[in-house]
Amino acid sequence: QVQLVESGGGSVQAGGSLRLSCAASGTIFSIKTMGWYRQAPGKQRELVATITSGGSTNYADSVKGRFTISRDNAKNTVYLQMSSLKPEDTAVYFCNAEFTVVGAKWGQGTQVTVSS
Image 1 (cartoon, helix red, strand yellow):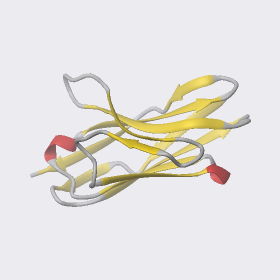
Image 2 (cartoon, helix red, strand yellow):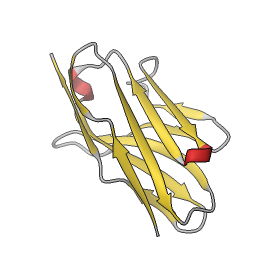
Image 3 (cartoon, rainbow, N blue to C red):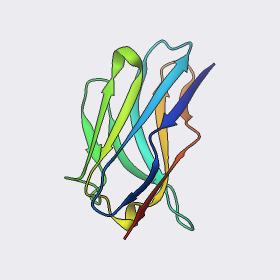
Image 4 (tube, rainbow, N blue to C red):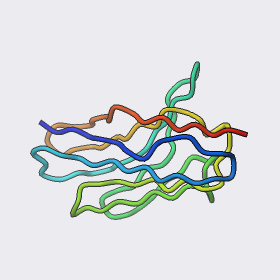
């Protein structure tokens, strides 16, 4: 069984920065794409950024130039460095990973709150 555990959320003022981490644990053979999604109150979950095992990245237009996704394959961990945060970035951020054997899994989510 595998699980994803996020950390690093919190409250910050507009213009500030936060770094999210998501570590995978359990019996892991390999992980394909890892990513971050977010869900604001009353809205659908949306993609923030993804990164493949080879390091190719994809970002939502709303975060390009402000957020950076990275991963440490040896630690089965994905990171999201968020800078120049805006109030509209307020949401619960979820980690997602596609495992080769068990398929896609979600983390429990971590709250990010940006005040103006």
